[in-house]
Image (cartoon, rainbow, N blue to C red; front, side, top):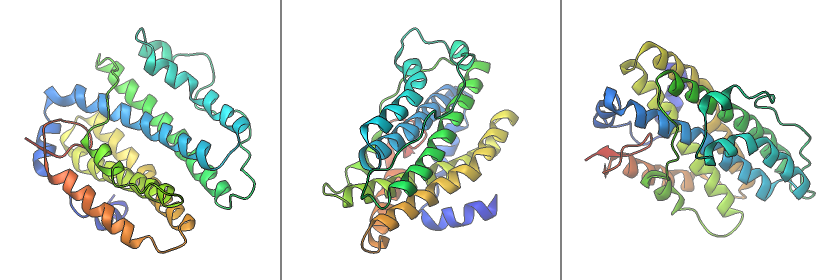
Length: 254
């Protein structure tokens, strides 16, 4: 675990405040924690899908991606949703059916597709794993809007290409790295099942942030260190500043 966390701690400018851990470990916050975590896993998959569809594939391949996502989105946006029915559905889970064809002339297309498809598959799996934990604890799923953390990071994204894509990938790296850091810091304070689950997520989440950074640098014509430093400072401020909401990526509790 320490080998996985060492580069992440170096990448992030600060650790999660103890005040957030103290709030997150409270039994009264368990529902909010798992519901938001579940939403985060799905949003991560949806974001990766958006990046593939916008930058790397044609419309026909985009339809293949949308078909892959449909069972998850039907569940999320159906007010009569049932966790039990979703997890027990007969259709084969978590498989991309069909080949995604890279757009001609997009050099980074194949690499973006490969890394993001693997990420999507893992995030869908994590989404279902969190749902299973919620079902075992009789916690119903709820849709949640984005908090100040995600909004604050996205406000810093530049508005011209390829800078927009580069910045979005860097933001993705920080979100994944922060998730990994919080899994590790929170795990010792949770029950055995949740502790085991959060520790199990560390390896994939650690790779996700590295994949995002690798893609960002491969797409950028210049060194991305300055942009990484910029977002590191923004991210640290969001994590340590007072935050009236409690979410998986929220700041210091008010």
